[in-house]
Every structure is written in C-alpha cells, then in structure tokens.
Length: 123
Image (cartoon, rainbow, N blue to C red):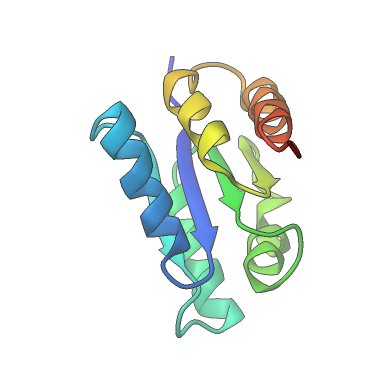
C-alpha cells in the first residue's frame, strides 16, 4: 500500500518549522513537505502544491481555515482524486499523521482532523 504524502502549506516559515519539529520528535522520514506562501502569488502557490502532491495520494495541511493558502489549495485540489485538505494544522495532528499515513486518504484525513481538534483545549 502506498503511504500518503503530507504537504504543509503555511504563511512565512511556519510549514518548515512544523516539519522540523515533527522530524526532531519522530525522525527524518516523516513523509512531510513544507510549502511557504512567501513571495508567491496564487498561481505560483498552486503550482508548488500541485508539484508536491503528485502523484498522490496526499493530505494537504493548511495553517488557517481561510486565506491565500487555503484558496490556492482548494482551487484545483477538489478535482484531484486521492487528495484531501485539512485546515488548522497543529503538531499533534502531524505527529499522528507520521505514524498513521497508510490507508484510504478519506479515512486518514478524518482521523487526523479529529486528533488535531482534540489537541486544542483551554485549561
């Protein structure tokens, strides 16, 4: 079975910092790629995302539930089978992804989104 590739898309250096943190905790073979929107118009950002998810399957993690990164991902990704988008990326969901990236992309995306949501709490 092919492992799902994880593509983190974020503002500034956030995506690279998240990949670095995951690899520090879990090891270098995380299956994650970082894409920054720095100095990108929407077309350039779309091209970077498309190159990263090819050939798939892929899960695209977006830093915010709105904005340029999400718009670039959603414009063409909705048409591509085997690719799903999860917004509100956090370290907990990425660590879960690294150890559970085998399987159906829809099932993995739902599980990862659930883990990420449960990681957010007020104490």
